Length: 222
Image: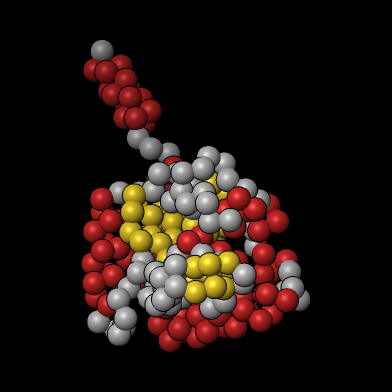
């Protein structure tokens, strides 16, 4: 009887214990950020050590399942963003956000009313470089209160380095919509495209140097 109970106990313990593969499976967390054209931000974060995948998409608006053409009108309320999937054992959410300020100019809003690319842009309109419109706004969309606190604290700290006020929107994520397939991994698949050569590649190289300085670059990206 004692032997039978011992065997039963061992069986139950084995069945309840996690398998080695499950226990050792790396964890993945996500960050949703927008810093202008998502082709740039995607290419930049693919260089970050610990980042597993980056998906370009849309968030922060009211239109369901928006298309790129709809988002470009500025009427959907969405921003171009990326979903960064990362291993928190290698790079933390705080580090993802701290690097975000190096990836773009978070203070970029128009200082007065004006016309850009044939369209009227009121004072306070977001822009990055020559890309004007609310869809290019600086944004962090958090998925937990912990992420919210980290983003706000990071913004306060980095403001000390900027003369102009940081205009980054920090808001809860309602829904992330992946962009069309042709937007994914755009720089790598379209290295000779005009915008890539003149804007994406220079911004990515500048960000790459920052990563090298901070020891946050993937070995294969050096």
